[in-house]
Image (cartoon, rainbow, N blue to C red; front, side):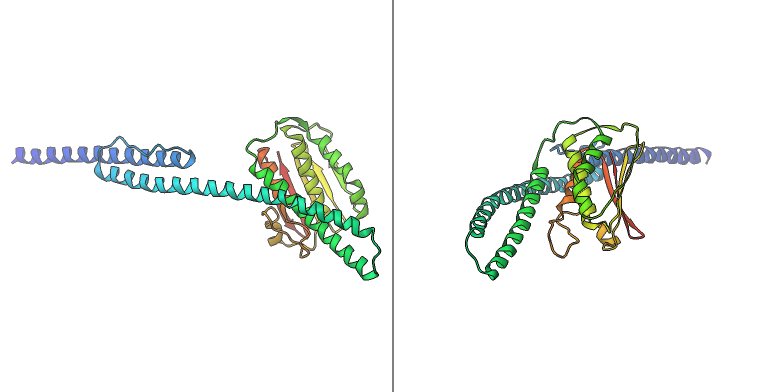
Length: 294
């Protein structure tokens, strides 16, 4: 009886050991599948998931995932190709629009030299005003399309953020004065040096100053901290939290007049991200605050 009992116990022990080994191998296979799946999602490679275990269930799972990975890879390539074709089409269209616009302005200049009635002069002014808006939108669209289709970015160099910010503010002095905006500046005396594209950073500041001109109620606070954090803050009673949350969206514009494509801040965000920085916008107590970290 005792020998029979020991035999049963021994069999159970062997069964438990076998099950533990089986569980370990399954866990190992699941870990391999998890790591390989994450790697295949991140990297653009044709290598499929392969596992060390011979368990048919785990290998069936790996094969099923490989089937879906092939489909995902095909769809990803199709999306990238379509996205690039669309970007190139936008670039070409915005570029082609320049030629007829140039001709329109040429004929408008000729018309201004002709004798016209009062109504004709008024209509001509309206046409020229609308043409100017169209030209501005076309140029903005062209700059953005070139930016997003560019495969290589300009070379970066050590740049003193303080100097670029001060130069940008000085360049907008006339525009700010016309709006009776006297910026309140808090720029640290400490030199904030970052490895960035100087022209791109200058464009970022110009876009943010243009945004302040568009939405400010008459005030503007610009701060550059010792840590290199830059904030543009102004009262903007015409905005709300939902609108501010979409300021960086492509082609979104708050203005009913549609005098802008809404690409200015989208371009700003793209440029900041290319510099490995971040940009955020907050709206509280009628104050719009745009914060840049580079």
